Image (cartoon, rainbow, N blue to C red):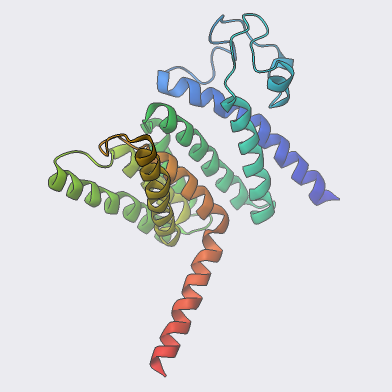
Length: 264
């Protein structure tokens, strides 16, 4: 019974925090404070009442429009709240009521904000990635993945993409990966450690090829069109957060079996 109550509490907390993440997603790219002023309609500036801030429910009741000026409220708002709630609930099932759960949820919130900002504006703000890297590394002295794995993950996440970006720039004469992507991958490595940052890199590249490349071909846009790679990094990092450890263990088991078979 206690576990069920905790699960519902974590789910509700995720929905509420998802509402705050919407504020971050809207205000950070504009250089605005995420604390002041209070939530308001961007069109008519009317402060929102408490019953207009109930995650998901308020959007449905208001039918996706401001109660005063009837401006359309994008569906991304309840979607972010629902996804955050689902991520919180899923992380609780994976990590349980442990200190590591809080760290993973903090990391997941940063990923959700970066996903949406990069999707809309094609930027990955330093105000999230740089402190995020420092926080991830600092917490590794207390919890998983441990400071050595975190440091190595930070270096791999930051240096390897930087070398790839530099090589692409020299070969093609144009930027293939922004520094924001590099800083974001360093943050991923700091939080998840070096084995999982490799998985994140692999998944992000696969997603970029399948989704980004396929989308460019379907829309017949020039291949020089910039793809917001940070969105794929965010999805890949969330996947690594949930299933990265089983994937790593499966790979190690398969590799050990292969080595044993060859050595016979």
